[in-house]
Figure 1 (cartoon, rainbow, N blue to C red):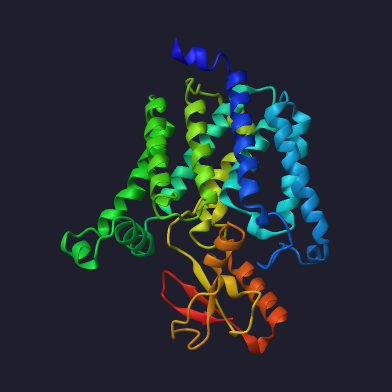
Figure 2: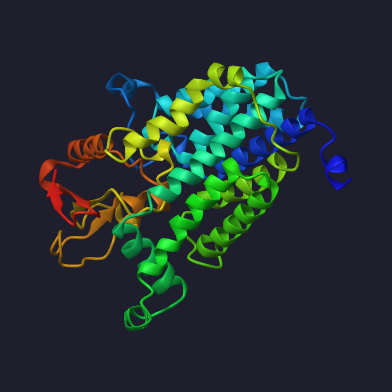
Length: 374
């Protein structure tokens, strides 16, 4: 009885999903607005060099049109034309700057494309949304099976910063490897979501997981990566709505017709473990893997002063420096796009803007612990 009152049909289910995603997408873009405009200090790095010459005003125009489109989707009756125009605006915006290739943006764009292609086939939409969530939880968990996750995120962020435990306590009670329970649970929940007949119960466990994440990184916890708070809220609503009705099994013809999604969500992420596919498009989240970029600058650079880290006498010796991750989080409220080619372009741009003599760029590999100068 309760489910029938909440969602009378699959069409209503899709309608609620679209409106929830559009509303939170709107709020997220407002919150991280500097990610979507070019008038900022953090470098704008398009995937193709010729796009560098696009005027800053176009970034702002596309941003405004996208926000308007999202509001129309929230308040008006859902139609395919609105969804197509939103997809085009978002795609164009992402084409102008790689920092916009965030995992939540990727998920929303995939969901939007699924709805557009299957607009009159709600069963297909529900089933493909289901597969996307399975992929997200599966690869997010698999990427965390590494020592860097245990040392940087589990030990430093959770055990030390969140729970306030000392290294002595961590070693005494052998808590270091207990962090492996996190990826194990995430992978098991993903597999259970795929094969279990009780998908509703699994979705409730995933909702609890997202609530725990919000407690951990939210304003009363680590107060970190605020743009992800909205994504976690969205996922809670998506899980609640998507599994409010049973996810029906589909036929082989539907799977074959949508095989490109399976390739994108289940095959391509495998290549990310070998550095041959984008990490954010494989939901490599909080794994501790990858590079950290450090930029040594002169003391008299007033433009960068609000984002400088204190002198630590290490890489930059007596000079202040920028941690690219912290700079991005502070100014544009988004994480840098974790791709070596993007880092190299940022390094070239910084040296060109501030002068070779005034800037030194270092890349630190969190897995090998090796540091190289660009």
